[in-house]
Amino acid sequence: MAEPEFQQAYQEIVSALEESTLFEKKPEYKKVLPIVSVPERIIQFRVTWEDDNGVQQVAPGYRVQYNSAKGPYKGGLRFHPSVNLSILKFLGFEQIFKNALTGLDMGGAKGGLCVDLKTKSDSEIRRICYAFMRELSQHIGQDTDVPAGDIGVGGREIGYLFGAYRSYRNSWEGVLTGKGLNWGGSLIRPEATGYGCVYFTQAMIDYATNGKESFQGKRVAISGSGNVAQFAALKAIELGAIVVSLSDSKGCIIAEDGITSEHVAAIAEAKIRFKSLEQIVGEYSAFAENKVKYISGARPWLNAGPIDIALPCATQNEVSGDEAKGLIAAGVKFVSEGSNMGCTAEALHAFETARSSAKSPSEAVWYAVGKAANCGGVACSGLEMAQNSQRKRWSRDDVDQALKKIMVNCFNDCVKAAEEYSNEANKNTLPSIVKGANIAGFIKVADAMIDQGDVF
Image 1 (cartoon, rainbow, N blue to C red):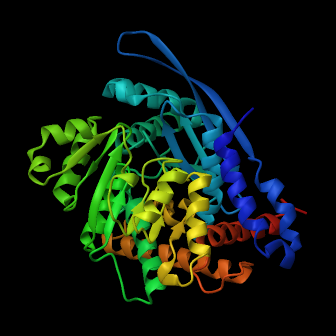
Image 2 (cartoon, rainbow, N blue to C red; image 1 turned 180 degrees about the vertical axis):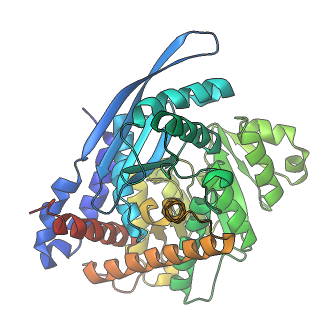
Image 3 (cartoon, rainbow, N blue to C red; image 1 turned 120 degrees about the vertical axis):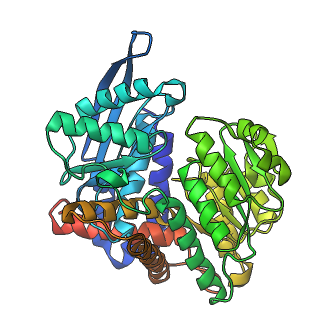
C-alpha cells in the first residue's frame, strides 16, 4: 500500500540521521530506527451514526498508537475527509519526536475519522463524536493514551468526545486535552501552538542576530486561518510585526499594511460557522476599510510581496519547491512550521540549500521543521495533563511562562544536536534545525527504548 505522507516523514528523519555523525559516533542507535518506525499498534474501526434525515452513515475511524517509551500515547484526533492511514501514520511518527522535544513524559500517537463536519449540524456532530468514542474509549485512558484535537476537532468536538468517554467508562479523568476551562482545561491551550511557533521563531531571531532583532517591524506571511494561524498572527502582532497574509482551502487574503487583531477576531468568530475567507472579507466592513485583498485559489507565498518571516500554519505540504524559491527571492530569513510537515521535500531542500550555502548567518535562510516549531500545542497539552493529575489549575502567566521555557529549551536542544553531530563543510552559516530537531528527538526516544528493552 502506497503511503506517500508517511514515506516523506520517514525519509526526512532517515536523511537527517544518516547525513550526521550520530551513527558513526554511537552505532547502537542505528538498530533503533527500524523498530521505532513501526507503530506499536494500529486500531481501525467502523463508526456509524444516524444523520439528521434518519439515514445511517458510516466512516472509518483510526487510532495509530505509535510509541509509548516516553510516556502515555499523546496526539490529536483529525476529523476531515482527507483522513487515511498514511496521513495518520506520518502524523503519529512525527508526534513521537515532537513530544520528546518538549521534555515532557509523552509518547506519540494520532487518530481520526474520515468525515466532513462542514456539512453537518451541531446535533449530527454530537452523534458522530459519541459514535467515534464508543469504540475509541476501549483503547485510551489517562495513563494509556490521551488524545487531543486537530483539524476538524475543536472545543465543541472535544466536549462531546469527553462527555461520551465519561458516559461509557463512568470515569472523569484527564483523558482528553483541549478541554473547556470549566471542566479540566488549561489556560493558554487554545493559543499554545500558534504562540509556541512564534516563541520558537523569536529564539531563532535572537540566535541569528545576537539579540539585536525581534519580531518588531518584521513582515510576516502566515497561511491558514484556523486556531494555529489565528494565535500565531495575534502573538506576532502583539510583538510588533506586520502580518500580511492568512489563507484557507479556497484562497488567501493579502494586507499590505497588515492584518489587525480585529480582523483575526472576526475570522475566528466566522470560522466557527464554517465561513470561508472570501465570505468573511465580503461581509465585514473592516476588511474593506483596511485594504485587505482576497485572491481566490491561491496560497500566500507568491503573493505576499517582500517578507522577513514565513509561518506555514495550515496543513501538510502547503509550501512547494517553487513557492520556497519564491519566498527566498522575496527576502525571507526565517521559516517556521506551525503545521505538521508544512513544506514539501522540495521546499525543505530549497530552504536548507539557502542556509548551508550562505557565507554568513546574516545571509542564511533558517528553516524550522514542525516537530520543533509547533510542539507548543502538545507541550501545553502535557501541562494540562499535569494540572489534571494535581487537580489544580495554573494561572495564565504560569502556563505561558512554562510554554516559553519549553520552546526555548527545545530550540537549544535542536541547535546543540545540530552542532554536535553536524558533518557540514560550511561552518560559517547557521546550524540545521532540520537535522538538530530530528537528531535530538530521536536520541531522547531511542534512549528510552534501549533502557526499557524495546531494542536489544
